[in-house]
Length: 265
Image (cartoon, rainbow, N blue to C red; front, side, top):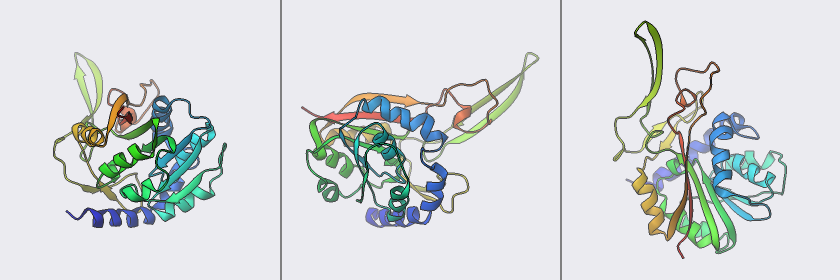
């Protein structure tokens, strides 16, 4: 598998749909980000006012803007020049954000941002888009101050993987109608990369790279990081009318996994 070719193709695909993705998320992110991703980042990151925070694979800048509004001094990087262009023109509260074009899979490019100079590094909803993740982990280890932390939020590998199938059922149980919604999976340990849709209506698909939990964590441990925080987050249960299919219909199934890692002492 030619990972460099896949990575470059991924960059071109993201450039092609940057305008769609930016419009989808707007200033503050779509419902998925507002309800799940952003709160998990804040829970694991903790107070960050006046801290130097690096946002890797920042996309159109949703999380970078959120961190800046909390008082962080944010540097945000991505490999898509089109996404960065969209991020730069969006106004936000808080301190100015420095946007730079850096590939999350290029260790040297990340290290050049300043070894030992960041209080925190964040990476949200991007690990599943990267053909390799070891360079990001190793770079974070080098970029963090001694007491720094890396916060990663990703699609939950056990549920929100490359092959989930949502289902809805209606049955008569003892004279009462019962509705069920859930998620079905066929595989978990060994799932090849696939091109899939990131959001309904987008102009093109992009590559997803599934990794079981043991792989997500072993790569981090090999880079000299240790896990000290873990959050699984689903949409809250609601009595309001909601779709029968989709993540908001399955409040017992976490769509995202958040991890906090620190440098090994």
